[in-house]
Length: 203
Image (cartoon, rainbow, N blue to C red; front, top):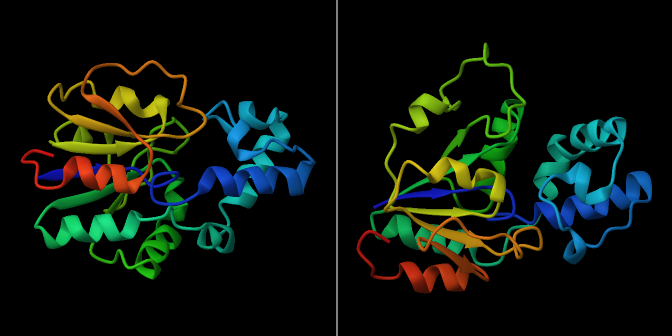
């Protein structure tokens, strides 16, 4: 079984982290539970300059390494790996964060998980080439049985796989989102994801 897993807000608590950072940097006090938008500029009502500064600061190495693991994430991924599943983390993080993202995974016991960076949100310079960069045309040739994703903006990447089971990690910014199909299943956390995938062929 091939499993796609998003990084931020599936494996780690990025929303909670950026909520605190926006408050510290700009006095924008929007608690995590009130984050109604996946887009951080909208969520915290930032100017273009504030948004740029937030992304720069929030993607510094020490900042990314400080983000806490989502409870149960590493345990479930390692269960899948021991079961023989092929687990790939595909993130829209900036390409320059590959090394620190790889280090975060290693520190959290996920050294056997493959990490690929794809420009999900149109932010990158596509002249940059590296083994860890996943080009969209290559992504669309990949086949997955199951996906774990929180971002409504990323749901469009699953339309070519009608049989794919998409486990939507519930977050404040997706609770009111209408899911695209019956193959999208809301999950309250990793225990729910474990229960759905346990022993089920094809996820």
